Image (tube, rainbow, N blue to C red):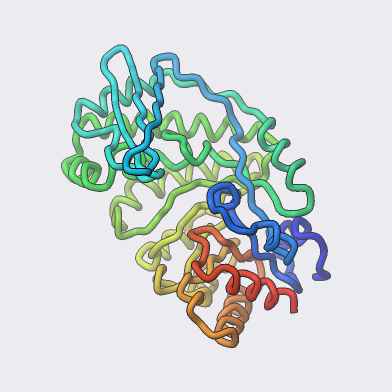
Length: 349
């Protein structure tokens, strides 16, 4: 396919065309949160992937209070979720959660009340603003909430594990099938499907779920019991609207590769080869011939020689064949001044 703008090449790749000059693009989050010379990289051909919320939400039983402070020259953020039956608290340091909202079975009850009777309204406002700002420099994916949101940007099981309770508390409660957890999960699953129906009434074609899936954290059994049935329902809803579902799966996936193959998921976001992941691109393509790959080169290539980087990137291209885009989606390489321009140069040859 003849090379065009960054936007054109991403769209063509998403449609299955083979692209002469594949795109390397960065998440909007990194552009906002990593203070490096992005303009230089954009001038060299780096694209950008923006993410836009597709709904407005109202929580009639929830009041949120946030406060900010500085602790040892580090930014602390405290958040309180206040309901008529109690309140929840979490705090983070420099964006990393140190105390989670849910610390006991009673906290699941408060969270259930906080999310009860939630309503969603579709909106194209943020999507349209993003598309206008990007122009031909990239594309916008719709998603189920802002990066800092709790509640919707992942499927409910993942939200509870990653954002609400943390791995330790969640692991104990899901193993024991704690009643309060299971009741919250049931309510959130129903609300999530209603949210999916809501975003079908927007202009976004490609939808992102920030699953942050690495299977060792929940295991194949829980994945098959809780996530696969929900994915099937989500894909069935989106199929009727012509929208495509992409999931952020940035970890080890081999033990659920067969489940992914049978799923209706359209794209794997931040697909990372070893050592971070456990499948190379050729293995993934043989198992998932029709899925789109948003490929994140291993950060280990930051230490490779220029020739070895070139061989690595070209091998990823051969193995993916079509329906792919390179992403800077996990972290900026420490030696970014060399590595990112080098990858861009390789892709433009």
